[in-house]
Image (cartoon, rainbow, N blue to C red; front, side, top):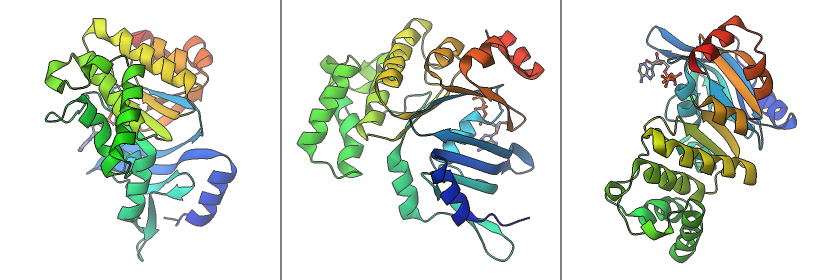
Length: 270
Ligand SMILES: Nc1ncnc2c1ncn2[C@@H]1O[C@H](COP(=O)(O)OP(=O)(O)OP(=O)(O)O)[C@@H](O)[C@H]1O
């Protein structure tokens, strides 16, 4: 296996304006190849949606970016810096150092399907915890910012409520506010409405539309809500078999896909 030249790769990535680059990424769980020499790039400020059949590796991609998982081969660059590099005589992969991984995590906010709020903290504490403990923000400043975010997500009156006192939709809005409180460069959204009752889905999607249209955050979004994907995306990536089989602007992917596999998938979900 050839050793990638990470230094030159990183320079190329930055020069091309890519904030995120996956370069020949392989992810295996045992013998199961989930990502198979996957290549794609995301430019700063773009909104990219990942679609594809269940099990095609979409969530794995987000988890790799958060450094919650490690790749088996290849290279992932964020802001031109690799999250891992080849090391040792047999070319095995070594993750970037802990300090750098923490730096990357600070740049990235993630919203999960299951909200994952801290159950023992109220809404305000959920939103201010990381800005204070990770970014070192002054508590008063963090609380002021939390108040603004709660206004944005329409939940100022729930500031002292605990997660169990909120509906799923409200919890997800708090989770979105919590992610934004870190002022991330990149927002990862992993099927954020899948666990919601149908009547709560529209409110959360409207909030995300507003964020997409009014901020310059780079968004990477896994969703089964094709209408939403069409509204917010600059680019849609269709996954199958551990690779991107087709990508393009939403009008083309949804209106006139090139691949038969994309047509089949869309006709099953639309
Ligand atoms: N920790 C793990 N150990 C073993 N296999 C795993 C692990 N995590 C994910 N997988 C497998 O990797 C594959 C890709 O999973 P992933 O969750 O990324 O798919 P997905 O495209 O997001 O699917 P869905 O749309 O259903 O959420 C699946 O076959 C899954 O079973």
